[in-house]
Amino acid sequence: MPKVFLVTKLNTTNIGNQALSNEIINVFKNEFGDENIHVGGRPVGLLNYDFPKIKVSEDPVALFESWAEKVYKKYISSDKKEKFIPSVPQIKLVTEESSEMKTEGVKKLLRPLKKKLSKVFVYDKSYRNRLNIIAASDVIVYSGAGEVVDTNVFLRQLLELRVAQKLGVKTAAVNQSVVISSDVYKKLLHHVYGKMDKIVVRGDVSKKLLESCGVDSRKITLAPDTAILSAEEKKEKKISSRVGLNFTPGIKYSADLVEPIINKLNMLGHEIYFITNEPIGDLNIQKELMEKYSLKSFGLIKSYKNYSEDLSGLKYIISARLHTNIIALSAQTPVIAIEGNKFKTSELMQQLNYPVPVINAYEDGWVGKVLNEIDKIENSEYDFKSYFEKILPQLKLAVRKNAGEIKGIF
Image 1 (spheres, rainbow, N blue to C red):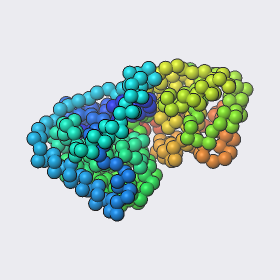
Image 2: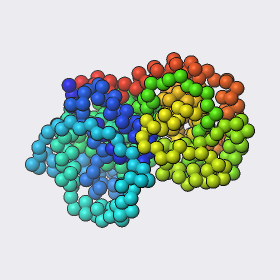
Image 3: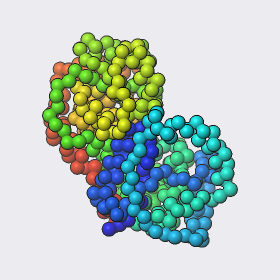
Image 4: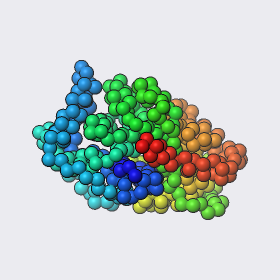
C-alpha cells in the first residue's frame, strides 16, 4: 500500500476547517489505512521564502525554482534519515478560551524576529525532519481548502511540493478551490501543479482556472468538499421554529441593511440564532446583531460535530459562511446561501446540485433576493425531501474520490 504524506491544517479557529480536515483524514484512512498515512500541518522552517521577493523578480519562476533547488540540494547532501512515520492526529479547534489564543499576542511580537533569524538558514532542523518523512513517502497530498490564494502560506506550500517532485515523490492536490488572481501565481501554478500526478477540486471554476494556467485537464477531477460528511446519520427532522443567520465582514453588510431580513423572520414567528463556523472572525457582527435585534446564540462550540448538531435543529439557515452552508446541508437543514468569498460558495453549491440559487452579497439589492428566497422556502417551493434523501447520499459517496483518485495513480 502506498505511503501518504497528507498536508492539512492541524490547528484552526475555523470550525469548517476542522470539519474538512478531520473528514479528509477519515477518507484517506478508509482508503489507505492508518499505518500508511502521516498527516502534517503547514510547512514550517521556510520563512525565508516569501512573495515580495518573487514579485520584484524579472523571472519569478526561475527564482522559485532556484529556491527549490537550494532546499533539495541541502537535503540530499545532509545527514538525512528517510523514514516514514505514521501519524493521524485529530484537528484541534482553537477557541477564545484556548491557550493558543492567550499567547497569540506574544507570538505576534516574536514573528518578525523569527523571520529575520530564519534568513540565515536554507531551512531549519524541524523542516529537515519533515523532509525525512516526505522523502520516505510515495506521495504528498495537499488538502489546501481555502489556502490556494495569493499568499505566502500557499507560496511555501508550492515550494514544498516542488521539492518533493525533485525528490521523486508523487504530488497531488485535493479538496480545494483555486482562487488565484495574479499572473505571478498563475505561472507558479503551471510550474508546480502542471507537474502533479492528480488534482481534485471542488468545482468547475477552479478546474477552468487551472486549465487556463496550462494544467492538463486530464489530471483534474471534481469531487465535493469533505465537510459534507460532517453530520452523523440523520434521524427524522423535527419541525422547528428556529432559523440560523450569518453575515460576515467581507460582504456588503450593515446592521441597518439586513434589518428587513430580521423583521421578516420575526414576523414569521421564528427564533433567530446567530451562527458561524468562524466565531472569532464574526464576533463583532454577532455582538452587534445580538444587542440590536436580540438574536440568540448557541454559545461556545467545541467541535464541528457539536456545530452540526446545532444546525440540524434549525428549520433553515441564511448564511454567508461557506462551511456553515456545507455543514448545514450535511445535517439536512435547508440553506439560503450568500456568496461570501468571490466564487467559492457558488462553485461548491453548483457541484452539490443544490436547488436554491446562491445570492451575491457584493451587489446592491441582495437583501431583497434573500427575502424572496425566504418566501419560497416558507411556501415549500423547493423539494428538499428529495434533495436530502436522493441527491445528498450520492454526494457523500462522491467525496471518496478525494482519496480514490490518488490511489489510482499507483
